[in-house]
Amino acid sequence: MNIFVKSLASVVKPVPMVRYVSTTCTNYKDDFQDIIQPESREPNIPLYIERDQETKEVKKARLLYQSRKRGMLENGLLLSTFAKKYLCIFDDKQLQLYDRLINLPTNDWDIFYWATGAKPTPPEFDNEIMDLLKKHIKNEDRQARIMQPDL
Image (cartoon, rainbow, N blue to C red; front, side):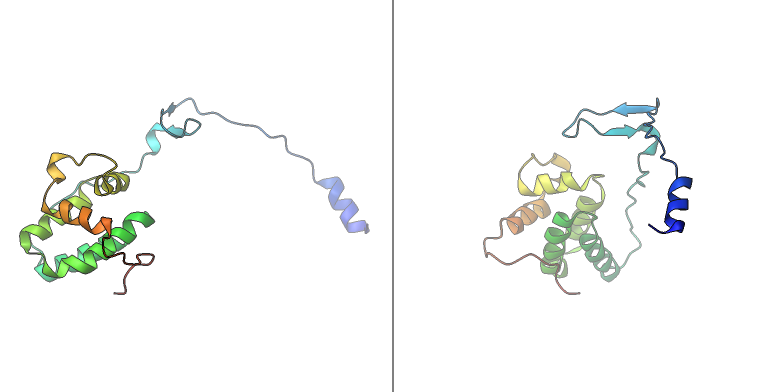
């Protein structure tokens, strides 16, 4: 061992492991019992505002982007392939229903569970677009959906 390593080893002192526990945390009971969620650290999700001034083409482009960039791979794959297939044929009412479906719920897992049938769909989202999405997810044509479609 050279002299430099010996002198460095004598300078470095071990730091004791200390675990700090915040008293402003709440334990949430769910699948992850050991996770402590700080009360004030919840992300601030902005309220959904309907965009009435958008043209149909701008709305389609925005919905296509939002379908691809979900933050959750499962929904990104399902919604991007759905949007690629159906957005071009949707009328204004159907575009509005799809916009509400992907932007009103604050949790992407809710959309996934409703569309796959794992949880019942709430009445406000149980419409023709959800029915079409459920049919798309069944993938009766057995298409490979392991990547998002090209833009």
